[in-house]
Length: 135
Image 1 (cartoon, rainbow, N blue to C red):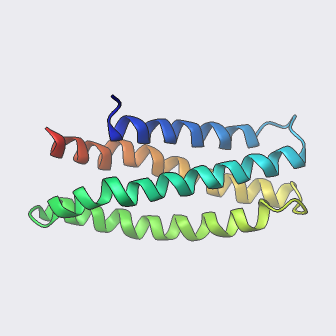
Image 2: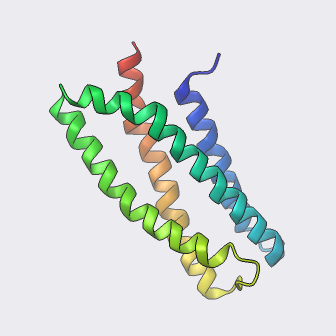
């Protein structure tokens, strides 16, 4: 049976693959919008799972570990900023009537970098902390 962390990492890979597909210059605007909706839904489901299964265990452990508490506080503040930017982006560009143009490319690049960086950071920091708790 796959562990929670294995499953969350698979989510990360799937989300990253969806976002990579949006960068393909051969896809039409309609397909890009569909991919963005799928990526948005996948990201929301992933975040909910982390909120239910990952963060409660880390928060409990952080009550007795000041370093972990600081890490969780940092990740919470970081996520607030990323969430705000991602929500604005998806609200604007998931709509069928939104244009896939230079403005989109810049906004997508910013959101893609933020989400990709967060995914990598979670795997190297938060997920390792969670795995330590499971030993």
